[in-house]
Amino acid sequence: MRNKTRLVQIGDKKIGAGNPILIQSMCNTKTEDVDATVEQILRLEDAGCDIIRVAVPSSEAALAIAKIKKQIHIPLVADIHFDYRLALEAIKSGCDKIRINPGNIGSKERIKAVVDACKERNLPIRVGVNSGSLEKNLIEKYGGVTAKGIVESALDKVKIIEDMDYNNLVISIKSSDVLMCVKAHELISKETDYPLHVGITESGTVKRGMIKSSLGLGIILYQGIGDTVRVSLTGDPVEEIFAGKLILNNLGLRNGGIEVVSCPTCGRTNIDLIGLAGKVEKLVENYDLNIKVAVMGCVVNGPGEAKEADIGIAGGIGEGLLIKKGKVVKKLPEDKLLSALKEELDMLSKEA
Image (cartoon, rainbow, N blue to C red; front, side, top):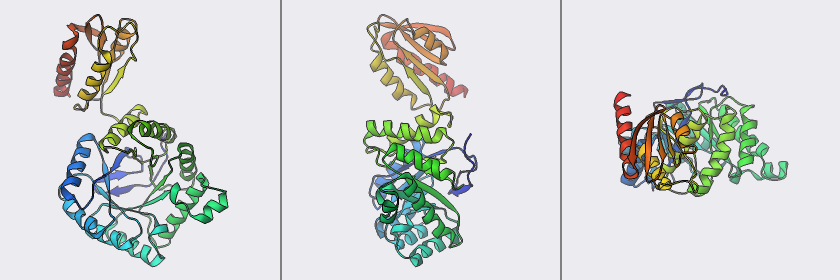
């Protein structure tokens, strides 16, 4: 059961209030390089990204937003630090949401200038707080960087904006410490009904980051907490979308996308299952089908697992069975299994 949160509109997307959890990413291009940024966003769109964020460290980056927006199809969030004037420029350029930490924007007058500009356009503000930028007084109060300190910092920032008579807000609290991040989300979800953007920040390279993010996001999302997610990875941001979809799919929070199950192989395996499973995983990325595909290596668990899937392959000695809805369709040489699976997926796509 998901927590009840407020409805927030970001461009043409709705979050909170029971709407589907959306997947976000952030470009790692220079925002002022419009061609490179658009190219990356379009790849992210194809992968299933719902909302994209770009860094705005300069006026050139802020002005580029208008050109980028004309060529993409998903809402764009402007990420602002330190200089409130960049937020104002990004808003004029047509961003769909502003991400700020009111603690590093400057005086309340500067914060109010940003809030007023957002208020004119009913533009949502994401209030973001990271454990790495926690205020010294909160570190001293709690004896270090803690979940309670992160939550207090975020709620303090929210109150600043609420006191300016604006509440079109999303909250983001992040830490690279999985357990601290989980605890912080558990605490803040009891204190507010603003939509929460969740993620494990600076989680690492693709391999390590996927593991950390899967652990943290899995625990948080399983408790019904979270309205948007990002799997932060050091690498191609398209990998973030792949990971986010898998996390949501496996928690039953998102439909669509083929689930691939495969055995770890053992001495009974007589086909190149590792190579085949990798090719199958790559193949299914091109299909928007809500089905399960099993790739199994031998006769011990293979036929049973394959029968539980919508489509399955059970390996033999240099050959394999193609199984569909529990029935053996064909026995094929090993080198024909992938193409046969593709034919079945193509047929299912036409029927869908």
